[in-house]
Length: 290
Image (cartoon, rainbow, N blue to C red; front, side, top):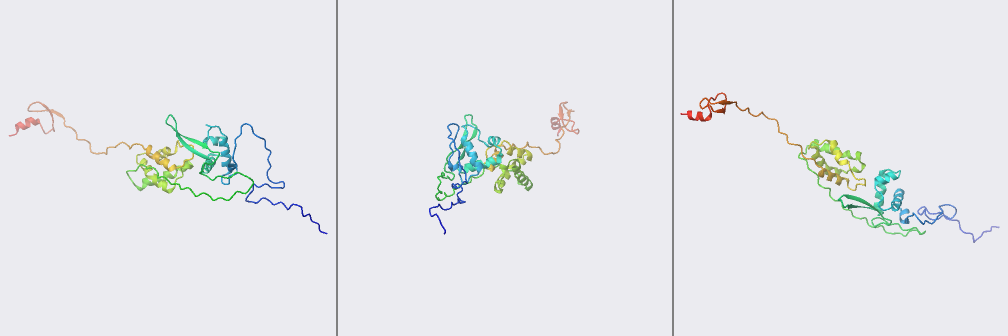
């Protein structure tokens, strides 16, 4: 006779794929062995560590930044020296955190007049990114995503204009701009940005500046932080560092006329300059006229 226990619990259901943080009932999943911290700790919100859009590198980097004391180095160069990830990956992670409101960069003028960039780490999004709710064990409520923010693109600064628009000169300037990204990947320019900068580079080239010198002026001494508008920075350098025009060169011409030798007048014995055909000075020639 078939016997069944009506009070036996039903078979446990596995966690749905869309909610991997749900606790599993039979042995699987993570468990915690926690000890309460009393010193040297930082509080990190679940909205960050369980963020659905940030990469794992960005989440870990934000945790590190929140643990740093005020004044510690937080630029790309300092972080790349601290961690095995290279500057490119660290820069990408910083851009993620900035886009979601966990990081912002502020420019300040020091007492000496120098402009410095200050990195601000935020333990709560400042409203520019999507804020994830804390994990309560319940599925998150559906919410309507905020409308996309309108971002207006500022016009690029003006650049110097060349005196000549020869196709060969403009092509040389175009080729030079295309090589800048080989020296710094952040200097990758769009076609529109390149067309705007070509006259400025041509103005340098027609002033007898070598292409290598123009490239050096545009790529050296760039800031360590990510470049938000590399084309604007290049336009500023083309204008601010424009060298003076070359000195005026006198075109070759016929030699100046040779002056006549000094001779004595046959009439008054006064010295005067005249061709060999003249034996008297102008005054004596005038008196001798009928």
